[in-house]
Structure formats: structure tokens, C-alpha cells
Length: 182
Image (cartoon, rainbow, N blue to C red):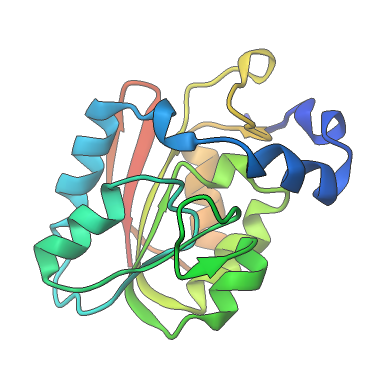
């Protein structure tokens, strides 16, 4: 298995330490345009989408662009309040407040979560389809931007299957993996 827990788990001193670290970060400046463009393209290939959510939007335009394609207003959230989203808090706090949506966008999130397996199972209870992106070619000693995990494609696909998602399409863009799942 190529899944590794980063040294950053201990560096930030528990959940409160992580919350403090993330509050002051504007993640939108870390955008990778090629990955974002590919994510939006993949996100517009789902059928019968009437509701969309992203509880870790981080100032990204990905989910609003996909929602615009389908003509829906997305449910948006983030850990901090700096983006003035409808939902503020951790995934564990915000996802249970969602109705079941047709599409959940989880872009560049899993690698930041303490327990991504549990969070994927929680997301599964609140969506019919998932659009997921995460780095798949990051080395444990070179993680950046608050990443707590590194993994490869097969690790992510194992997590998806354990959470009862069915990957339908995969695309690799630079170091990132993009999955379209039912």
C-alpha cells in the first residue's frame, strides 16, 4: 500500500490546532488551472443533476461553474468563514445538514482530512454522485498546503469502494487524480 500519514498530523497539535491553521489560509491562491479546467469538464458530464454541494469549497470556482452548467444554486461550505458560504465548519459538522444531493464535489479535500475514510462514508450518505480530485503523485516528505495524507490511485479507489462509491471514470492531470463516481 502506498498510503502514508504525513508528519503534519503531529505538527498542528490536534483538531483545534488544525482548525487554527486552516482559518487564516486563502486556499484559492493554490489553484492549478489545468486540474480545475479538467474537473469542471468532468463535472459537466453527469446526468440528471438538480442539486450540488461542496462543503470544502475553499474559495474555488469549480463547484459554482459546474452548478451554473446545470442551472442550479450549489450548497457551499468551508471550515472558515472567510468565503461567506452558507455552511461553516468541518465536514463532520456541515455534511449532515445537507439534503441528499445529486452531485457532491470533493476537490482537493481528502488529503487535508484527519479521517478521510470516515468522511467519505459520511459524504456517501448525502449524495448520489461524487466528483473527487486529490493528488496521487505527492511524496510523503514533500507534502504541502496542509496535506495530511499522500497516496496513489489504487489507494483512493480502495477508499472510494469501501465508502460504497463506484468509480466510473478516472483522469490523471499532472500530479492529480480526478474521479467520476456513482
